[in-house]
Structure formats: structure tokens, C-alpha cells
Image 1 (cartoon, rainbow, N blue to C red):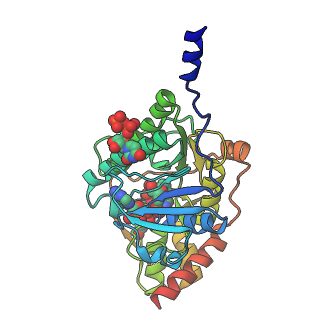
Image 2 (image 1 turned 180 degrees about the horizontal axis):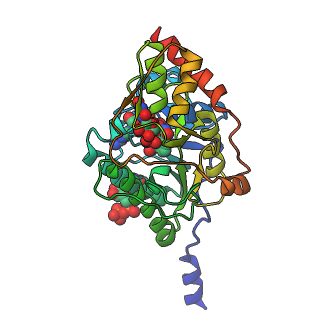
Image 3 (image 1 turned 120 degrees about the vertical axis):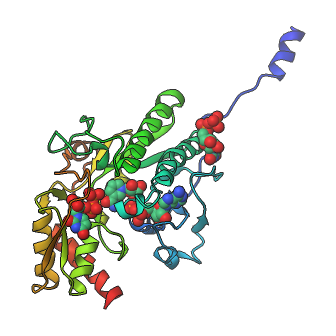
Length: 331
Ligand code: NAD
Ligand code: UDP
Ligand code: UDP
């Protein structure tokens, strides 16, 4: 009897579940960048505490400076390839340069950012019990043989080309997410984001929409690479952010395509921007960079069904807002 009592006294009962907070604490890596800064704005508007972590390589502190002084907001200049200790409930892991001009500037660093950065964020999610959403990309489909691209397609990626540091980096990041999910039950959400555009893209970003708008505003010829017959499908940033938030708050690990399924040739895009900004601007043809995918268009049936999500902003409406933003910065 006495022995039993003694054992009961030492019986340990652990608490169930994670720490509960009144206000959701959200980490946004890459929050000084284009998509991350829009996401941060919306998360703050919806009453969350937001911590932005960014090394300001391809993003700018000015993208988030409007939140300085907001007690719900915090900025940490930090490189995600190094470990990070913060206590959070959700992680939107966006830190990684996204434009070929930036990610090819130091390909080895791009690989480290995707691999080590994602490993650290998964370690953080494992320790804290946070949900970790990884911003993957349509680039993991490479130059696709399946059109439009569904999540079940494994892709056609050159492992040793000039885009590989980004494409393969994101592929290993996805693999890491799913190993943490299987081995550690880490809560993951993998979003495969397709070409996204909108206000706050950098003037020297190098991506097609910012290049064309800046060129048209500066009365310079629009640089079409190749013959302009390659296609892309462009999603306005608010639609993308909405998709990411829905995915985070779903219970689906993904992968989930987040993109606008309306497809344009690059030449059609050039003509559209020409008409909207400066009908007298010319088009000039430049060599097509190596491994440039010939076509790209998301199949978003999965996001429609599981997230009840569909882009709502047409290319013309989105371009109008984007052009106005560039105009205010350039003219
Ligand atoms: P962006 O370059 O504007 O933003 C990325 C941010 O990450 C920048 O602020 C940059 O300084 C930061 N960053 C880069 N390396 C870092 C590091 N090692 N440590 C900390 N911060 C670092 O790009 P974006 O267009 O906003 O893209 C955001 C995310 O979405 C990226 O992961 C990108 O791969 C993904 N994505 C974007 C698109 C798109 O069309 N914009 C498409 C597919 C996927
Ligand atoms: N990590 C981190 N923040 C944390 C917990 C982990 O940055 O709060 C990093 C950690 O330094 C390691 C990575 O995440 O490099 C993976 O962590 P995990 O615990 O899964 O692996 P281990 O440290 O056991 O190798
Ligand atoms: N592109 C172009 N002119 C430019 C910049 C890009 O014709 O000034 C083309 C590029 O070759 C690609 C498409 O536009 O076929 C989209 O390029 P971006 O770099 O924006 O995105 P990604 O290739 O990563 O999808």
C-alpha cells in the first residue's frame, strides 16, 4: 500500500497540446520582400502579432517601415541559414530571392537559403509546434511536359543549369518539409506559387512585368526574350496572399498550386503593357536565357476544392494598380 502511495506522489502528468495564446504570433521570413510585405500587412490588419525576419538581400526595409512603432510588429535582420530562436504559432517561410537576376547572383547562397533556411524553420516548427508554410514554386515543374501543371506532376528540371540553384533548392526544401511531416509530425503547408506581380516589385527586379512596366514608363523598348511565344500565368499579389493564408489555416499539408490559371504569351503581355502605359513604345527581341520554361499554367482544382480559393483580380485590373505604383516611384 505504502509503496503505491509513494509511486502516485511521483506520477507525472504532462500538459496536453501546445501553448495557447490569445493573439496569434506569426513569423514571416522574407517579410521585407515583395510578397512577404503584402502578407505582413494583411496579417497585422487581421490582428496578429507579426515578426518579420529578413536579411534584406532582395527585399527592402522600406517595404515594412510603415509598421515601425506598431507594438504588434517586430523586425529582426537575420539570415535564415543561421538558427533562429523565437516563440511563434505560425511560420510563413518566404525568405529566398525569387527573380532569376537575384537568385543567379550567388547560386550557392540561393541553395543554402533554400536548404538550410528551410531546415532551420522546420526545426523551429518542430520545437514550438508551430505550423510551417513553405513558399515553394511552379519552378519545381521545370520546363513542363504536362500542361496545365497539376500537383501530381513531378516536373522536368535540369539539375545542373543556371536555374537549378533555385529549382532544385525549392525541390529539396519540399522534400525536407515532407520528411519532417512523416518523421516528426511537424505541421507543414507547401504552397507552389506561380508568377506573382503587383505593387512593391523592385524596379531592378528583372522579372518580366516589372521590366516591361519600367521600360514603358522610361520610354525604352520592351525587351522580349526569345520570340515571345513562351507563356506564363500571372497572379495579382493580393490573390496570392489570400491563397497562402487559406492554406495556412486549412489542415492540408499540400503541395498546393497557388496561381492564376489565365495564360498569356510574353508577347501578348508586352502588347498589353504597351497599350496601357505607352502605345508608342517599341518591342526589342533579346536572346532567350537557358532553360527558360516554354509554358506555364497552374491547374488550381485542388485549391478551389480544398481552400475554396480562386483568383479574383484580372491581369488588366492588377496591371493598373502595379503601373500606378511604379509611376509614383519613377516619375
Ligand atoms: P523577394 O525577393 O521580393 O522576397 C524574398 C525576401 O527574402 C527578400 O526580402 C530577401 O531579402 C529575403 N531573403 C533572401 N534570402 C534570405 C536569407 N538567406 N535570409 C533571410 N532573408 C532572405 O521575392 P518574392 O517575390 O516576394 O518571393 C517570396 C517567396 O515566394 C520566395 O520564397 C519565392 O521563391 C516564392 N515565390 C515567388 C514567386 C513570385 O512570382 N513572386 C513565385 C513562386 C515562388
Ligand atoms: N533550429 C532553429 N530554431 C529552433 C529549433 C531548431 O533554428 O527553434 C534549427 C537547428 O539549429 C537545426 C535545425 O533547426 O539546425 C533542425 O533542427 P532539428 O531539431 O530538427 O534537428 P537537429 O538539431 O536535431 O539536427
Ligand atoms: N522575360 C522577357 N523579358 C524580360 C524579362 C523576362 O521576355 O525583360 C521572359 C522570360 O524569358 C520568361 C518570362 O518572361 O520567359 C517570365 O520571366 P520572369 O523572370 O518574370 O519569371 P520566370 O521565368 O521565373 O517565370
